[in-house]
Amino acid sequence: TRTPVNVTVTGAAGQIGYALLFRIASGQLLGADVPVKLRLLEITPALKAAEGTAMELDDCAFPLLQGIDISDDPNVAFDGANVALLVGARPRTKGMERGDLLEANGGIFKPQGQAINAHAADDIKVLVVGNPANTNALIAQAAAPDVPAERFTAMTRLDHNRALTQLAKKTGSTVADIKRLTIWGNHSATQYPDIFHASIAGKNAAEVVNDEKWLAEDFIPTVAKRGAAIIEARGASSAASAANAAIDHVHTWVNGTADGDWVSMGIPSDGSYGVPEGLISSFPVTTKDGKYEIVQGLEINEFSRARIDASVKELEEERDAVRGLGLI
Ligand code: NAX
Image (cartoon, rainbow, N blue to C red; front, side, top):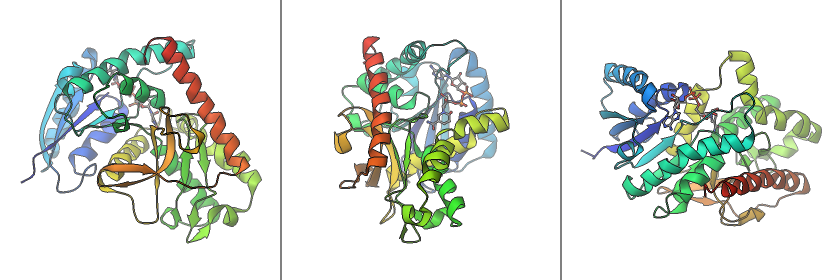
């Protein structure tokens, strides 16, 4: 029998946590034959709610679930972690400036990065979901100098999945027909969903669509503003779809991309496509044997270049702001 994989989830008592933990425990994160131990990290006032979720996990009697630990101490929760899903974050509240938001999240992600550095397993893989995800990932990564930087990633898979469905609907195809779509940049309103390299049933997606006005005025803003549209409709932010994307992100990272396809991940830039080295920005990646690689050699047209640059500029501003706050 295999040794269980330790999966740490922060913000475990939150709404994404509630949609995520059951799927991890059922085997959908790592595979149907991989036993898991869950380590839940919450702030002290939410420990009781996390215990309630743990009771429900017990009541599912998942054959793969070999234990649940709950803690409010990152040093305990990340001890021996093989996979860490950093979901808990400080949301922007009314009247909060961007600097305040980055500072409040620095207070969460810096100590978590330090705890990962000190206590996680050597093969640790980190996905940051909590917003601002890219810059929170940068803060955690900078606080973990002994962990290879590429193990810190930020989630843009929800944006990727949103873009797949919008494109499928527009073209009367199915998401299974679509390959090689890319989200570039920041997980924010400046993100750029790129269909110029995508294919639909083997044909170039941009040629199938053949409507630049739709791209600029409908597709891109619909994908970028989908989170706000969900809040407007549901009265609560996206949770099940975010949890689903977190499952997809880690599953793909661990188990590999399909031949001829790629996915989008926020990862530390190696300078590819003019994105300054070290920024955590979304790229097209293929994965194999638990490692990812940026897809190289794509031609970036003017339409795409301007949008990638704008999102990367925002990431640079966020980086400079957290640098100014002494967080990286
Ligand atoms: P909730 O407010 O329901 O849950 C957050 C949980 O985190 C709470 O239970 C809170 O107690 C906990 N928490 C706060 N500080 C903590 C700390 N220092 N250590 C451990 N736990 C802590 O939010 P939810 O809807 O679950 O969303 C979580 C985060 O995901 C938010 O930052 C949200 O903006 C972000 N999202 C990111 C997405 C992405 O695509 N990257 C999409 C969905 C989502 O909006």
